[in-house]
Image 1 (spheres, rainbow over the protein chains, first blue to last red):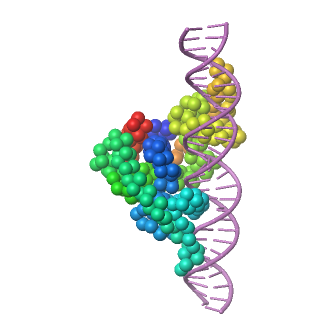
Image 2: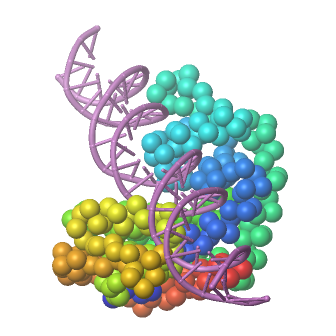
Image 3: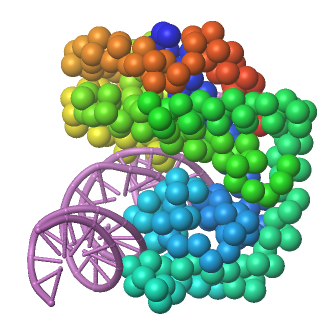
Length: 141
Length: 141
DNA sequence: GCTATATCAATCGCATACGATTAAATCGCA
DNA sequence: TGCGATTTAATCGTATGCGATTGATATAGC
């Protein structure tokens, strides 16, 4: 492990993440979404009505980042934020009709990214699993 | 390619990058550096005296991000920023003595990260090369 | 029941990221 | 040579990220 950028796994991840977001940018611009907003909506499309904390555990963000992001999504009319009745500390995030409708307009994005990646679906899946394993090791260590 | 967070290669990269920065955080706190500042210094430790543009091409950042970051490194006395004499548009970034000295104090970091990754050096190297290949495909596409 | 503790979202401050624009300097080409 | 196009860094505005703190609510233990 030398101390040079091209040799560093951290820089490979860092620059690949940026390159990935660059690929997503024009696709998300069509939906008027930023990349983290897209991740949050993806979590909600899978399971609606989650609390801020539950969303944060999925996308790996804290309330200090999520709260402003969710307020922007609420201003755009894609979600609603309501205090939980059973536990007033929690805030439930629920998709609006436009928020739900957006899922269909995002459905083509994964295929676009697969195509841009220049890899086969099998190779990309294997790579994803290896990166996920590394991430879990890093979190655990 | 489904539209769910755990299945998305982009989210694997995104969350692994965050996990990696979380591992670096305490190591870089000891040096008083942020993660992008560390990347910039790493590039300078390999080759001193680069222009803002050359640094940006390496760490994949534009002057809009680099200029404030470099000003902070200059305030901390780690680098100097001087207009090029041959081309007044360019600004040369040069390490100061403290900036050079910091390299030795950062030398142990790669081994720490390797250990936290839970992977062998061979596995990590292979994974790094695959991620780099993906990044280059994404940039090219 | 009552209080110390814990949990949850929000807020604040600072440092990235990045699109768009600007200003200065250099280059290209007639 | 001269002038429009290009390059380079800086600036501006918006949106993350994140450490630290705060305020409100819920829980646990006595």
